[in-house]
Image 1: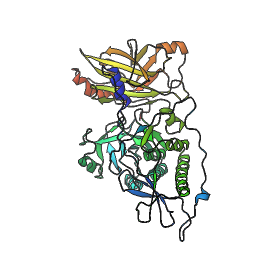
Image 2: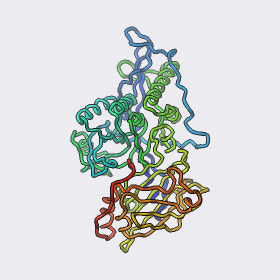
Image 3: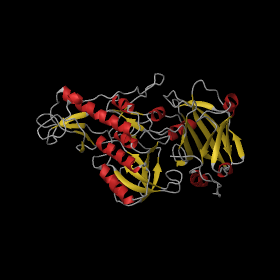
Image 4: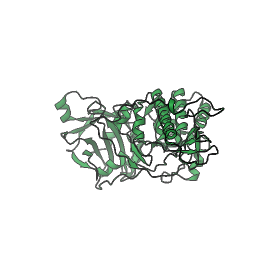
Length: 485
């Protein structure tokens, strides 16, 4: 799984230098199949990531054979004009080779966490885990029917799969006006280090509502999963979540599902064109820029490219200029409490910057605060201040660092505080850059100063402080004031 910003920024902050991110465990969607009879025509299919599993993709091009339905031949194919996917001044992100990892067919189950586990006021959600297959929409509809008026958000953790299934899932979510995000759900009793345990998979398929944790850092939504996500009325992509895209591959089979010879080029071109046009129409219906299809087609199906935050904004997947994750405990590279956030310092939605605030033990009876923010080469260093309640603390002068093999630079500032500085934080922690504020006046959207919600900070500190030798004390945190995915 792609290492999240939470982890690689922690490595930058610590003594160890980060290495190149590992490849994403990625179950590549199987081939889209154009089913062929004697006239080499039929319906298009897209297979799930499991070998041999496929589902019909309706609205496929069909030449007119006796008794067939509507006739859509190569001459009837309409091309869809696409906008350029990447502005001239924005480099195209590099695609990574995929690594195939088998995942079970997608299952949907209701998960329950602590207060605000899935956002402000959200303690329950629908987990969507695994490879999308053609029957997935029916299973999701059955679950939503059982839920009745309970309108829960859906969190996907999926390598992709059937495009037909994904589009049907998307339309179902739009019909129900649901919110969706990207997150890995770990039920109680499952081992985070053994996500493919058979016992854990059986638990997810038990039909019970499961106590669980939601992790929006170590997760994925690739290929067809992105198209399913597009159907949600509200889409919330957490700072560390990734959306991976690539092209589909096609092969043809006979009427019995057996692979047939390569069809004439005209048939293959018509099949591919009609399939991508159908996908572009669907995205347009969902309010997503169809240029997403052009971006996906440009990537070989044995590779995956992750959308930048600017692309996520430009394609209209998630239009928030400031996005923050909840505070959470991490164990690697050291035991810490961390929060990741994304901001749009220029306000033009082309240069989203990653930030991290991280809390670790620092005897005697102190917490070390490291604040890291992504910077450009021409940015001037500033003095970072944190304000919690009535207290304000200026962090030590920043140092610049970069992950090994990366040109992306981060500015890291540090301070040592008593636990009460954070325990008395109230609803939010204000972060300001005194130098920028003095030089530029009022900040642009997404620029410092920002207010970081304390959502999740209280329980995370309750876990961290005993390991620091500090007895837990009552906290004075109020309700969060910003939306957190």
